[in-house]
Image (cartoon, rainbow, N blue to C red; front, side, top):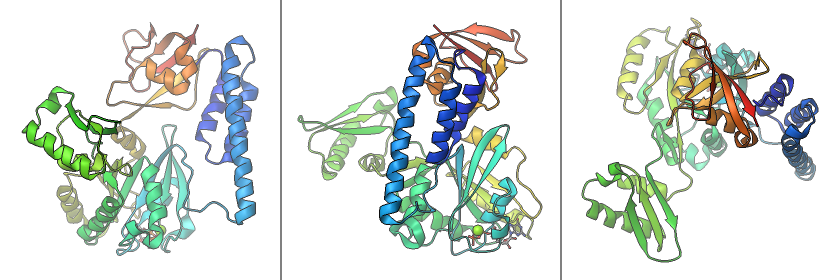
Length: 400
Ligand SMILES: Nc1nc2c(ncn2[C@@H]2O[C@H](COP(=O)(O)OP(=O)(O)OP(=O)(O)O)[C@@H](O)[C@H]2O)c(=O)[nH]1
Ligand SMILES: [Mg+2]
């Protein structure tokens, strides 16, 4: 972060980013503003955060009025995200797969709820190498959850916003039944699992009918482009588009075109957590499960709460899977306690990503950065915006 801000303010800002409730956000932001040294170079940052604070206060007021007039508090299903959010789900028809047990093993939360049906979400915070993961133990998913059965709508709307969906599957029982229900209900709810968004976009225009453009060399390698173009036009037309531009960026299927017409589709990363790995024959269950779904799930982790077995570096595994990388910011030689997470894909992360992530104003007034990389030949380097970063780099940004 900019050397103008100071380590205490930096830390307060991180706490503000991590805060989950409006009240907490307001408190943290007030703290941040009070800690920023006030001078010319910080004027912009202070002003911007004061206007954020005003917005939060308006939201707080609106919420108070809402509760007063409707008498309703926010639903227990509407969960404010904190850190990296993982949601544990399972199939209702195979009760007690062990979600609450896993939540408790990772976070210590909800000990007294194990072995009882979980009707509303339970939440805990798991920390690994100073990264916070919010673990949400959802009530199990019923058949037809996609139509709203068993709080289906509330559960799915949370899944749509999370960072990682964890399918919890009891390895001592029929895994196919459990997987089928979850995959079916998510698909029907327009949640796509472990596939990237298709390389096609559709924009409506005022005139010129429907035009299709193949914009990359990969896109131009689609089979029988003429035929494909006609089909795309038909699908777009059937989807209500009379005039529009379809841009194709890679190899596509017609289903991709249908999906891209549906704004409610989300693309989510997901893993499987096999549970009860201590029970008889679960080794076979795990092997079969991993093999049968290897085309959809590249990561299946076997666990046993009874044996307290879950990878010790579960957090790191999740970060890698989500293609996120951890770096540290530094200010006047003091390294921030909390790491900063940046995307390590599709492009290699650079100083630019860090500057933008911290605050656009740091990027705009960027002068240079100092990067400290332990074990590197030259441990300390002065670098520019394009410098590529590695895990655990320590970065000090200097503004003009
Ligand atoms: N043998 C064994 N039993 C386990 C394990 N994990 C959980 N259990 C038991 O399985 C039962 C159900 O566990 P819960 O964690 O409550 O299951 P859940 O998925 O939260 O269940 P619902 O909330 O009803 O969906 C409890 O009696 C747990 O003690 C495990 O790793 N091994
Ligand atoms: Mg439970």
